[in-house]
Image 1 (tube, rainbow, N blue to C red):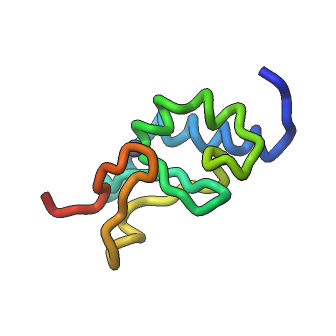
Image 2: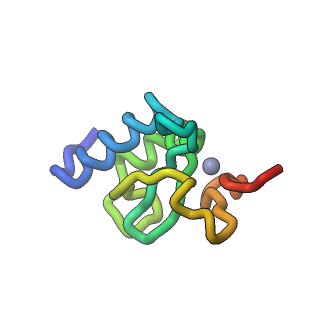
Image 3: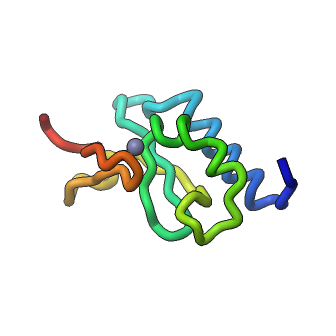
Length: 91
Ligand SMILES: [Zn+2]
């Protein structure tokens, strides 16, 4: 894998952390990854698309810059931008 610097290291670190612990404690809320273009990725997609994330140059929808938990998005339905799964629905 080509080395692309600190931002990419951080993206991989965040992704591996989400894969290792998909649910926040306490609360059990699902953790999500946020990309540089504001997209949301669920932990299943972070895991299945880790290669995309790890090789992203940014601006392609795969550059992970942060993580969050779905509890912080209670105001609106939250969907994974890759698999389109509803992440914070009641059902
Ligand atoms: Zn997903």
